[in-house]
Image: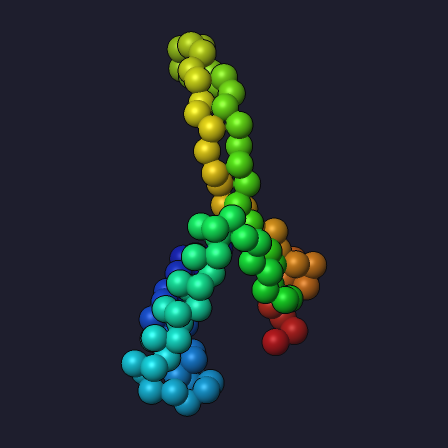
Length: 101
């Protein structure tokens, strides 16, 4: 399994190489896209990216958990969690190890 991490700068560099925008414009474009996605998720909107997947926010209710070491019951507070559901195309691409590209 690869240890490589894709960063914002990697995305900006890819935009620079593919589209031909300057490096600063490419970085601004990547920041803008990430900002729009983040803002939509904060507003509890669903973000769908075709052939990639769907990001959504889910509300989890309060419940009683258990400390695995002591067995003591611990209350778990209600919270919002981010979920990602990959598209079938993305699932297939990952499963194939990206051999087709």
